[in-house]
Length: 276
Image (tube, rainbow, N blue to C red; front, side, top):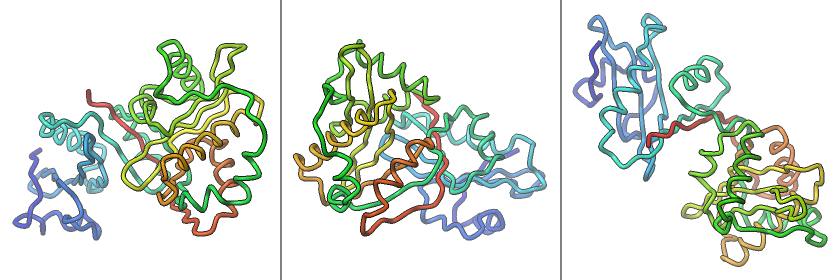
């Protein structure tokens, strides 16, 4: 097997494997050649301190020969001198084959469900949201950046119990100023959390969880998020809910159902492989 960077001079040979994908939309394209034939391709993009595997295809003739795995590993060998700390994988439908492939490469699947894109201001002013966040606060609210070591460890333990990889959450959102934890001081444990990532003009809700049976605990972190968005004047941002669990999907659907300008996106399954 040979690997080659796909460029204009050899693009025609790999065209049957691209199915309309435009190479100009990607930062890097790598192809595999077996028996003098184009056997597989992977297309990547650079994302600041991470990499995104956006497209992968192996010719039916050469499947189950390890070509897909070899392509990804070869790319990572070439990219080892970059500052990337993680490789993301993203695909638009729930493919069992691709799901198993991602797991075999060491990816941790952490988004699985529907993504909802909505203007933050419209969301904060929606009837459903404002009805939900009414009431008094019962718990101490901690910004994730303000967690001490003991509190951070307890939060990661709770996230781990939810079948999520706490390292992923810690790496992506635990220090964001829009991430909050409702703390049960009586039992010294986190009651709920909302973990967000803010980049440019988009706020992404990565994880929303209630660790108790009291629905008010979830209300508290949603109210804290609203107050922070207003305080930081981020109402013009886009808010993206990526629903990773059934419970999170139900909450998101209820909250955004009365919001004008709601943009539901396709089913999303994606994951991450830490490189550090």
